[in-house]
Length: 297
Image: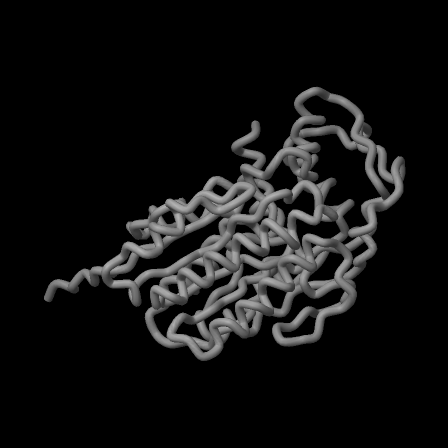
């Protein structure tokens, strides 16, 4: 007896598709054969993109994945509390008005603030260190209240520290790759803080899994992380060995720690997505970094 192929009649609308996580999400959607439309957000959301959300006929089968977020390179820019927040509100209101099935927003581990130890969904946030964190946190709270009594399910995915290919210019991975290619010295802080690192493909799979799940599941905040943490220094050393970059070029302690590096040892507890969707990260740090190294070498 032949198994029947189930045809999924949904449309995904996605912001931030050209970004680091966005590219991985689009690739995951393509692998699953899911049709998607890309919405562009720069300093403001374009009217034509908002109009796209008004067009679908079977609106209750449509999903918005909101990844777009500008000025990532400057966590203290007011852009996060103004442009990013206001553009997102317009998206949320349009999706709700048109009875979208789900809105999946990509938040951040930084929304937990200066909390140490295990970070659990539902716990109160500590002091938010940057305007980036405040903007994400403010939008998450708006979404939780705004969609509470609507037919649109709202999810805020909070990834831990995401690494992988296609990271933006100026990130740690980007700086290490450029220094290795040019064989130049890289001055850094002591890099003694701990991070919960997660490979970008695992994040993309988690986001898509939430978006495509057909059965009714618990809404709200979903953590995505490894549940483990290592020092930034050890992360760097592992990667440099894999890309054959001599550690003599690494000058730890040459510059002071940044403000946002005060957070010391924290890691994600991902109870909701494990319980409701049986998700867990497939790539440990060495495996993920090895995949990146193969692309670089």
